[in-house]
Length: 350
Image (cartoon, rainbow, N blue to C red; front, side, top):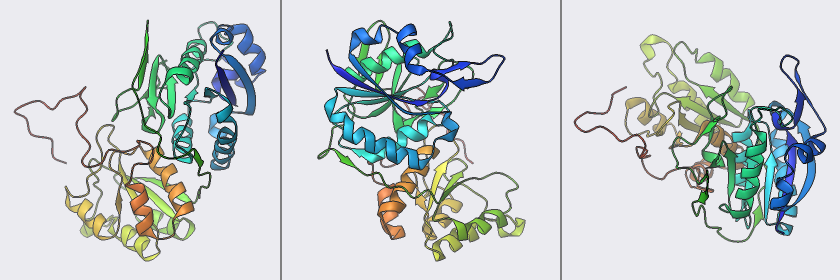
């Protein structure tokens, strides 16, 4: 039988209790064999307990350890499944996609909205689909959830109380697991299987909003090494000095301190183009890095890695804007095929 490494990190899938009492970690492996015995007919599964944490406790140091463990163990298996809580699942998938280059086997992350021990849990099907995807899916880091396989660094958690909790707004699904399981080819490995486990977590994610006092992020600059700004639309933010809330001084002071600023969009689809509007052009003049259609979670983790391996802001910028694991679209992000632009109508202005 093919061999699959099942690495458990914690999360709702492996918990017990709940409704009305709070969820708590449980003996995951025992529950797994009781509730999903079919898994062991699909593959020779080796269970390993990496951690037993609520995913809100997941930290960059754990990502580094997890990537190093997978780098060491993966060549002995046909694929790997990582069980994980849903709240930070997209962050962990992004981190692993950047840390594990040239993957020789699929690495599939999954979780659930209800614990495996509950009758109406989605955990059992998610686990079965994840194991199948680890055996037959593309050789990259993916998220398997609700019968869909997504590129891990393209996903967002979009729902809290429904089973279809994840979406990939700017990239098509890599697999659909219905009556039949169908997969796209995915990424082609470039070079040998390598580990890039270093991260610098001294970054900050700032969301632009009406009323933001620029003094607040300016006060953060002495304490951080990198900044991700979630701007409006295609990369807009206030720059009118007469209103007293211009963010242009933030970019200027960040540049003086050698702090790279990556601009991504709050918009769900498409991405940033800093050439479209005055504020974007002003940000570029101050050295801002356009994040294209990077998700905020992927941009944050990629900036952590960039700061760990590159010294100059220019090198950081080149790294951010160069695809490493299919995480961004070069050039202006296209309108997704699922939402074609209507003929005869001009795009909305800001």
